[in-house]
Image (cartoon, rainbow, N blue to C red):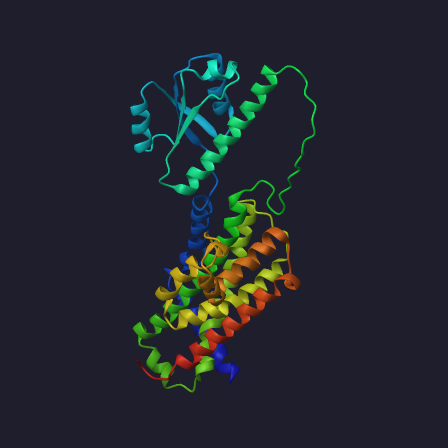
Length: 361
């Protein structure tokens, strides 16, 4: 292998890439736009729950209950209704997210020391969101119950209790952006490296320069290196750019060493660039995304599918990037993921070299 030929091919790739003005926005603007869109869209936080209320009790106790929901930063009482059918229609039309219906005997049952029923209606078409809304509603009701019991039972009752002191490490506010944005960084690096590499091969065939490469002394390894080195450098530059954007725009903390991320991304790019050279992007992008743990936890997948995730380089890179961002872990902890990335990258790169033949397909 002659490094002079590799160097000249790398130089040619950079000239071709930057000569086309259409490529320049894709190199800088496209990753930032995608980062903003994904960063705000991909979230599981529930911040504004629209509530419609039917108060059939019309007592100070029922009004206090409604005020407890409205005073909570997560809930917002938007409609006060009279007809249960109207509440059903508003849930059907997605004009509200939750319905609260207070029974006529609500206050009387409370004052008699009996259980008072409150009906909570939630749109269950989106099961994850519905579960979060139900949990938040139960929290408001628990707080209301505790306050009401203290008012109704003035006598001091002393008994032992368990005081749970909960501490959340690595993401104290349980902000979903802190979890998803590092994953978006990994996904963008994979997507852009796949697309640009496959476009480079297609451009050679469309321009008719593949025939010129065929008659040169270039070997398969030299061709692959010449095609991948430019995009490794570009992908690393984009990696630095989106990491800085995540830190400055989304305020995502970075507890670990950025050099660990750059080393992991270099190994990760062996797989993505190799796949891009083989022009098999369409087959791999969706399985990589679905089996990466980006949205769906791998632990919840069937055992057979969990084994398949070991063949997904994105799943290992996500563990590394989230570990470095949120936990500050290093190679001493993440070496299994580095090892699997290296094995997968080496295998894919070897297949890409083997599949390349100095002939026109």
